[in-house]
Structures are given as C-alpha cells and as structure tokens.
Length: 306
Image (cartoon, rainbow, N blue to C red; front, side, top):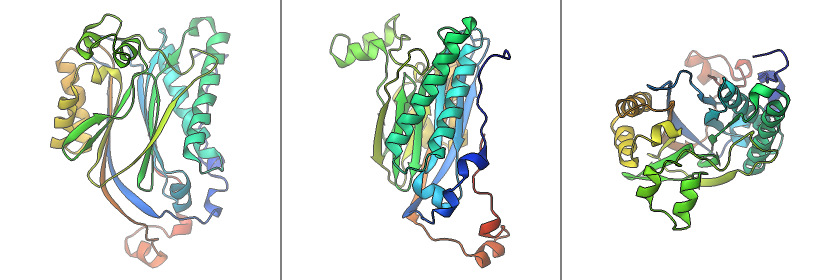
C-alpha cells in the first residue's frame, strides 16, 4: 500500500468511551456458536474476500449495540479489492460502535455510508485504485433480534426447523431480471452476466443498503457467505452441511465442497448457530472469582476480535 493511500485504525479505547457508564443491561442474551473460513479458491491468485467480527462482553455494549459479524467480497484488481473489503469492515465496525445512539438501523446505514465515502475517495485519488469496491453482508445480533445489512451479492441464509431461506436479496443484474420475471432462476444461474452486481461499496459517491431485522429462535443457524460459495453450492447443500456439523467444521466443509466443485472464486463462509436465548443475569464478583475469571470491573470492555 503506498504512503498516500488511506487506511483506518481500530481503537478499542476510543470507540468504547462512554459505553460502560450507560448502566443498561440486556433483556435477554443469545448464546452464539461461531465458525468462519475464507479461502483463495482454485483459480484466483489473491484473496479479495474477508470476514470480520466483534463480540463485546460489557453488558451495556451488548444491550445497546450487540455483536457484529460480516463478510465482504472486494473487486478492482491490483489488490484494490483486498484494500476495499478490509477498509469496509474496519470502518463499519468502528463507526457502528462509536455512536451513542442505540438505533441499529440508522447506525448501520450511517456506518456503511461512511465506508462508502472513504473507499470512493481513495479510488478517485489513486489511479491504480480506480473502480475499487466491495460487497458487504453483515449481521448484528442484539438480544433476541438479528439485523442484517446488505450491499452486493454476498448472502445471508437462515436455517430454521429444517428449512433454509435466503434473507437477503442479491444486488445483481440477473437477480433483478428474475425479480421482474424477465429471467428464470435457472437461466440466471447459467447467464454469462451472473457476476455483474448493481450495488457495491465504494464504486459511486452514494450508496443504498438494504437493512432488515428478524426475530431469532433457539436453534436458528445463519450462514453469511460470498458468491464464491453460493455460486457453487445450492441452498440445500448449505443447509445439509450446516445441520450436520458444528459451526467451525461446517464453515470448513462449505469451503471444501465449493472448491471440490471448481473453486472458481474466493470463498468465504461465516456460520452462526443460536444455541440458546435466555434472560440476562449479571454475574457477581463472587461468581466470577469462583469461575476463575477477573472481577467485572477488571474485565476488558470488549470481546475478542479477528
């Protein structure tokens, strides 16, 4: 990356400032088992996919902001796609958690707009970055709700009661043709234009994102993936693998099967299994000590991050 290119630093202390003093606690907490895998595939020379996540532990942050999981698929060549997806995920996480408002929809929309602006400006200033951009599919799990934001043709699937459904809409030319009845799904899958996307972060000065919120149930499984996965596997394949394995093994098996079927693109899968949704009970200092953990006031305010 040249000296004139922009990047973004992720400062936990900066974005956490003020949240611990809110004093709010979650109504309920979801126990989430999480697995993820990204892979070069069998054709590409570099990986322009990325996943990222952020799992706060502080009750005030969980209550107001929830946990973040995201997949991005970059484009632009000459490593521009790698830069775009890296910037998008970092900026969205930083921006989303830094605002004091608990409004998930408006915070996510604003964070995506901020990422779009920085990536677009970078592409305009640096000739070799012209056309850089990225898709983004991300999820906020907050109490017993999941909010999904969508730009591009990465996807989020929900598996519930043995059935799978896609809860995002692809922003692609063929998907739009299917929605208006001009093309069948089978024709879209075989079309030479199936990789043309109609929305992406960073390729225009403004961006429109789809943001939806859904009630979760115990036993739900959410799969976020790039089109390198969905382009090779049917929804029924994703369902079978996610139901047969733990999230970590499922993410690996999804990538392996996509590679076995050609691996024509970078491949990324994030699997989120909702194991329980229970009322929040704050742990006392004595309970923490008995479990061998630091007392609450000594804990780091943020969870682990990739």
